[in-house]
View 1 (cartoon, helix red, strand yellow):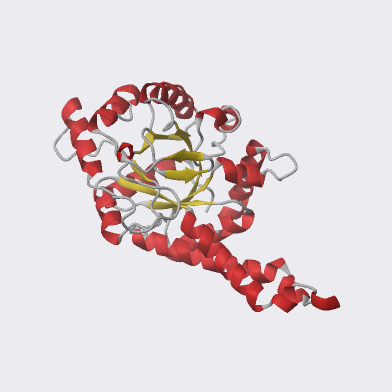
View 2: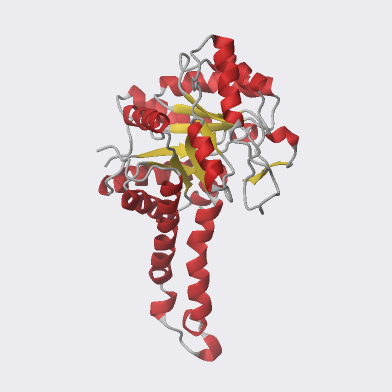
Length: 343
């Protein structure tokens, strides 16, 4: 199927929220990892999201000039072509973008989509993330308001992160401490500034102890039940019916989460969960295995010629794609999106 239109993407998110499941959002850094994500979604019969971080975009831009906009736009254009061969709907998203990279990443990509929409076309990306978690909430929301006005006009959904997620993601680092928990007041201030859909649709990455990267059990305490408290606080403030879920929540830093933590998050309105660390490992693990087992073949040792069949990138690349796609299938199962694709 083609990359999701704005209308299809909105329907995907609505269906996830109503059905209490979420879409895996898989970070990709190459055409091969993109195919691995698409293959995983297709085999799981799940729609999904693929996303490009600033670091991923820089890598895609090539090491000669490391241009983020070129890298992200090029892979997005590639995705628009190859996704047609997969029987699922996939949305394109840009991941964490802090303040110092807005002018070199999200704003130029927004401009590309604005030009496309002005020509009667669909936007290049379906959603963009503004990561203002390192800023004061006041400054964070002020920038979010400016971006939301533009994304709404360009038929794009904005994702905002209002409080820190621990660990490190593409150079943005936060300590693991009590600030990793969003308060009801934070959520109310967000709703006051950005509305509840009336000013444009947005996804909310709230913090409930999340940490990017790999961590051992017990290092942090996840409290996905906190999302319910945030919804109740906003519902009470705005006079919404009891049980309302005013936000479309995003689950960041989910590596190592238990099944129950994920299920609680889904019950409380999470519609998107970022998957990066686990898929990176899944992609690299079979490559390392291949290299170690075929050392004499992939290297020309002691004057020998090696084995072209073993050092051909297609040989170990196929193994990497298959392994990563399996991890995507697992993520679809964990998030209950397996078998939910829109026909």
